[in-house]
Structures are given as C-alpha cells and as structure tokens.
Length: 300
Image (cartoon, rainbow, N blue to C red; front, side, top):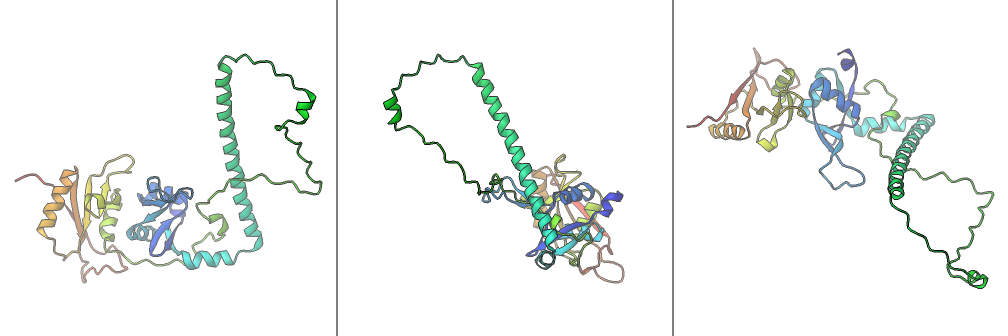
C-alpha cells in the first residue's frame, strides 16, 4: 500500500475531459482504487473502427475527483502545462527523447524480423515435406541467342564511393505518452476540480470496494460490480439524486422493473445534508451521510 500512495497519476484535462495516457497509471488506478474508466483511443492505422479501443482512458469527473481527494493523482491542464514544459526543454533532453523513440522503432523492427523468420521457416518445412518434382534438363542456348535475349538483366552499377551508407527503414511507432520527455517528477501547478453532483454516491460505493462503469445501457448512472468487471457481473444499476429532489413514482417502477429484467437490483441514493447547513454540491465533500435503497420488481 505504501507504493500505491506514493505514485502520482497524471490526469490530463483536455477540452473538459479527464484522460489518462500512461498504461502503468491505468493499471495502478484499477488495481488499487477500483477505477476502470473507459477506453477511448483508436489505432493510428485504422482510426475509424470502434471495436478495439485503447489508450487513452477517460475518467468521469467524480473518478478524477476521487484520485485528487485520496492524494493519488493530480489534474494537469494539458493545453498550458504540457506545452510550457516542452518549450522549456534543453537540446540534450530533446535529443535523448528522439534516441528513445528510435530505439523503440529498432525493437519493433527486431520483433517483426523474428516473426517473419518464423513464418519463413514454417513454410520451408512444409515444402521439404512434399516430394520434389523431377526437373527437366535446361534447353541449350546458343551464344547468339544468349547475347540477344530480351530477358537479360544488366549488372547493377557499383554505388559511388562517396555515398554514405543508408540506414534501413524502421517502422513507425506512435508513443502512448510523452512522459520520458517531461522531467518534472512532482505535479506542476495542479488544477482544481469541482465536486460533481454524483460524487457522494460514487464515493460511497468506491469506499465499500465496488467497481463502477457507465450504466447507460441499463438505464442508470452506474453499473455496480462487487469486484473487477473482468471477473464479475454487475449486481446493481445505480442512480444518484439530491436529498430533497422529488423522484417520480413512474421512474422508480420503470427502473426497478428494468433492473429486475437484466437480473440486477435498482439502487438509488442521496447525501443527507450535514448538520447546520445543506449540502450544496460545492468543493467540500464528505460532510453528509449517504443513504441508499434497492428496489426489485416482485409482481402484483
């Protein structure tokens, strides 16, 4: 647990969205804080597909706020902070970063060559297993036909001695993060994030070990899992309300029946105002008690 508290996750705020680009940070927040987030990146080779998504992952505002409250991450304004650090880099740091990218390309080329060699060896083994066909003797070619043949290929000319050796072309590699180029080990000028309206319920569920994902396909704010979604099905679909907010009876009936139809309980909750003042959803969090209820459709 000491290692989990020391790591600071950089959450980039881009156009009002909270993104995490580093795969190590993604694994860290999922393993230690139960934050799954949503994959939003596409492959540079096929950017129009939407089936196999990758980095970056997008966090909800309440997920980003939870990391900040626990001291596990900070919000960085990507437009100002990232560009200001890049413009202040010295030439040696830039050169080292370019060498780092070139080394990644060499490693990728080595992997490609090894896979290609394995495929060629496999095909050669299949060809040796087949019986060899009897080859016909070559036809005699006279000296005159050989000289005037249309299929003769001229010998390649020797390269000039002054030409420098050409470096073999390397595959293009798109880095997932520019962390090696950012020398700052501490969070530079962290950005504050306001307390979202759904934060009390989300904090309540996260503190009890539940994992959450967007619940739009089940008609709720969250799909709530008792553990990692890779291992469990969701047990609840959850909605957050204000303490004094009126909830229509039709919404309770529809949500309860929908949750039962997909084998889940409908959970809804709200934060009770703290003593001496109402909970206005401001930047102060955790004052009030959160109460939750579950509804299941049993029959008439």
